[in-house]
Image (tube, rainbow, N blue to C red; front, top):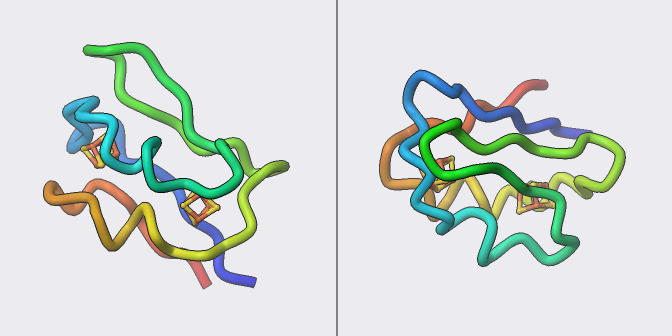
Length: 60
Ligand code: SF4
Ligand code: SF4
């Protein structure tokens, strides 16, 4: 399964990814950058699609 991680150096905490995640796997504080809970993530890739800052990395 594809796994996804967030590059905190690029993330601006806009919450777009968090809003589209179907399993509520993304959390974070404003200004600190968001993170993906790998235990919850089902690898759908929607977060990567909506991130406008190319902050979400796809790992094979
Ligand atoms: S959509 Fe991208 S920039 Fe916005 S909170 Fe998610 S990872 Fe960060
Ligand atoms: S890949 Fe899908 S399930 Fe995983 S964090 Fe992104 S939106 Fe959520």
